[in-house]
Length: 290
Image 1 (cartoon, one colour):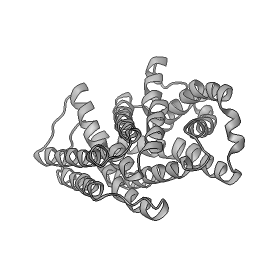
Image 2 (cartoon, rainbow, N blue to C red; image 1 turned 180 degrees about the vertical axis):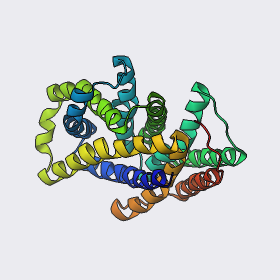
Image 3 (cartoon, rainbow, N blue to C red; image 1 turned 90 degrees about the horizontal axis):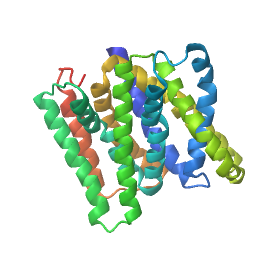
Image 4 (cartoon, rainbow, N blue to C red; image 1 turned 90 degrees about the vertical axis):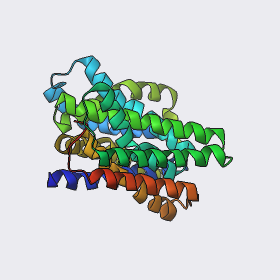
């Protein structure tokens, strides 16, 4: 269990840096299509030998495709789209901070669940925090594109929660699960990108291209997926999702220092509520949402 929480700290750091680095890349010449190509092209090539040696670990093609959609192609498309339209603080709350809520909803619909009073209170605080973030977009005269971005981030949270639940239910090793996601996503996306958008890579500064390639393709496409899947296997999807509610606070600080994004008071309040919700929910020792 201690090792699982150690892994969870790594997940928080990866998730925070994912938001910050992606926002930084999208503010330069790197587009959403380019980030996805770097992520799945590199990770897919690196993990292809795992598929060749181990196959799908007993999963059908349909099961592998659903796993890849939730943890790979669908998640990345929604996340990068959200990053492009919404500030990093919004992304931190609506994507990562809402994971306890979206995980609870998914497990509640698809399986049995037992939620303690502390966890009900924690989830309620997270809901209020998410609503505070949405109010910053709806009532503070922001563009309609930011509202779309917020919606994409919430959808990405549902997809990532679904991946965590399925990865545990299928009981396949973390490396094989990451390989299935990467290779299936690469196979589905890279041919389309090479035909339609590959020349856009030529316009990207070489240092930026290398940095984003290493980060998106190796750190996020391989290492973070392995770490998250392993954490879910040890702690379960609910505890792992609750731990990731620490991401909004770390991302808020990073956004201020690295991206010069100063959030509104409603956003800071939302982040505070989401973090409090995580702490309250974790105060319960009862394992829930198995």
